[in-house]
Image 1 (cartoon, rainbow, N blue to C red):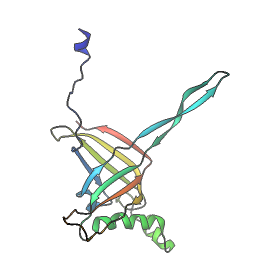
Image 2 (image 1 turned 90 degrees about the vertical axis):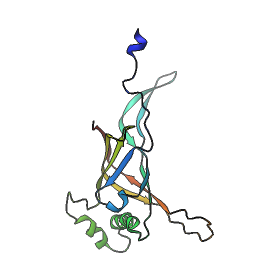
Image 3 (image 1 turned 135 degrees about the horizontal axis):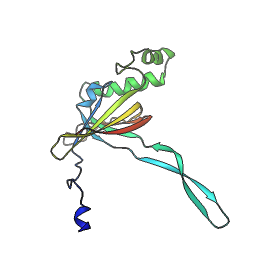
Image 4 (image 1 turned 180 degrees about the horizontal axis):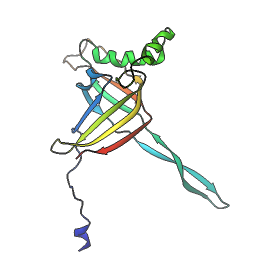
Amino acid sequence: MSALINQPSNKNFLSPLGFQFSIKKTPNINFFVQSVNLPSISLGTVDVENPFLKIPFPGDKLSYGTLDITFKVDENLENYLEIYNWLVGIGYPENFGQRANIELAVPMSGEGVYADLSLIVTTSAMNPNYEVTFYDAYPINLSEINFDSTLTDVDYITCTTTFAYRIFKLSLLS
C-alpha cells in the first residue's frame, strides 16, 4: 500500500531541449542561444577536530558555479559585439571613459555593468514551467572565434560566454 502512495506526481523526464534564454541587455544573442547550463551550487563545510577524527558540519556560505551560454554568431557579429562591448566597458583596456560609458547607463534599462538573466525551463509539452533568474550577472569570458578555410562543410561558428552573478533563484511558473 505504501508503494502506491510514494509515487511521483509527474513521471516525465526533463528534456535538454526545453528552454528559452534571454538577456535584456543583449537582444541579438537571445535568438541564437544553442545551450545553457544550470550552474552548480555548493555549501562548504567546517571540520571540527577531536582526538580521533574530523567531524564535518555545514558551513554558512553558498558557492555558485559559473553560467555558460553557447550561441551561434551572426554574420554581422552583432551578437558577438554585444558581449565584447560589455566586457570592454567593464575592463576599460584603453581609458577610464570606457568604464564611465557603461556605468552611466540608465538604471533598469538593461544597460550598465550588471544585468539580470532569465532561463525559462519548459515541460515536456513545451509550456513554461520554471524561471531561473540570475541576478547581477556580468560576462567574465568570451571564447575565441576560429576561422578555418580547410573545412569541406559549413559548420557555422559558435561562441561561448561565461557569466559571474550574485545569486540565482528558481520560480515556479505553472
